[in-house]
Length: 265
Image 1 (cartoon, rainbow, N blue to C red):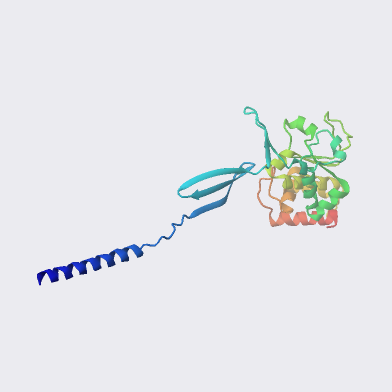
Image 2 (spheres, rainbow, N blue to C red; image 1 turned 120 degrees about the horizontal axis):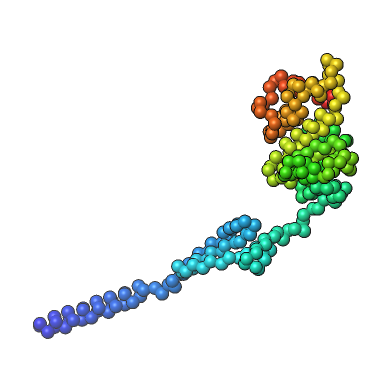
């Protein structure tokens, strides 16, 4: 009797063990492990005139960095004397015209200067286009007088480098590269155009039957101050000689009368 029960118990254990082995074996799945690849691209860094694209790729905790240059500059190979030049030089428009023969002509900003003239207030633009040469350059006689190239020069008589009158640039305005570098070229142009306006209206008669130009000198304390006042009148900002600040209503009205009387505008 005892042997019978023992045999039955052993049989049950064998069955249970077989079931557990089968269950554990079939519950394991052979799914593949997915390795994810993360890629980050188009990080752009610009240094001076050289542009590079940094391409960063991250894969399974391994990071590599490649620099892919974009060819926009040319660099000399000499490590002691490096020249960095733009590959777009062929797009530079070179001025060709009569000013190239003038002593002191620079020309780097002649086309920009022509555009500034075109954008001047109509009163100044009309008088300049009809009467005055506007030259991007360093007036050589003015250079000899002050020891450096002035921002701007008004030359009514055409003064050559030796100080003699009658050069081809009589009635001319000179705006130097230094004025463009300073960022004040427009206001300097207005100042010199104001001198031209003053000069070309020198015979204008005031309502009081006096020389209006000389009256303006007295009113503004001199020709340079008169020109600076006109810079403010024509919505410029840069003044070199005027120390009074913005125009007063009286000064503004005076200039209104001067321009209306002497130019018809």
